[in-house]
Image (cartoon, rainbow, N blue to C red; front, side, top):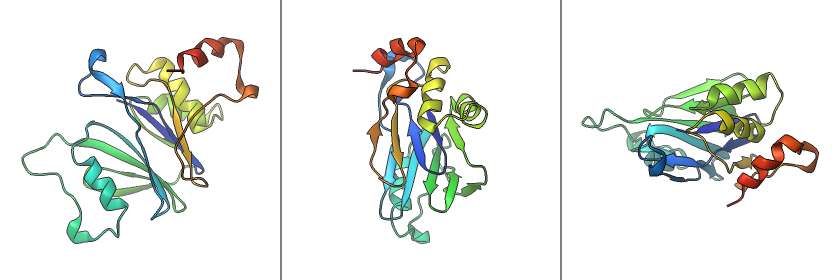
Amino acid sequence: MTTIACDRESIACDTRAGYTEVNDDTFVSLKLYPAKSVGALYGLSGENCAGAIMALEWLQSERNPELKPRPPDYDHDWDWKLLELSRRGIAVYNEYLERDPIIERVAAIGSGAKVALYCMKILGMSPAEAVREACKVDHHSELPIYVVSLNTMRVARYRLKASNKAPKLAKLQNEDRP
């Protein structure tokens, strides 16, 4: 229930999260986690994110194999992925913290991933622009958009640049405000 997209410079996310697929049970959530100590950025997507914060804490630490979190035997519903952007490139982690490097220049996870990938690969959009487009068609993704770059390692709310504003986007920009 989200859209997270990245290229080799930045990672972006929408802000819809929830406990069920019912719209009344959703809330605004930031899904980007900078890890300055290891020089990586993480985006979290999933249906049952139990254990994801333990995984993020482990990835941000010295990564002691003995302390690596594992899904408990009694909870077979863990279903999340972490999209990693670092100087080493792009990778995806599953709930077992198995790292799968991605050799392409862009990647996306979540319910709006296909739209975001199309926007980045075919239309040449940035990750933030691609997530914004996914929010138009994926009912599990919602404005506002947040973005963080490897250079700054600071999460910031995405705003349309003046050169990118078009009359048909003016209404969406107003919806993007709280």
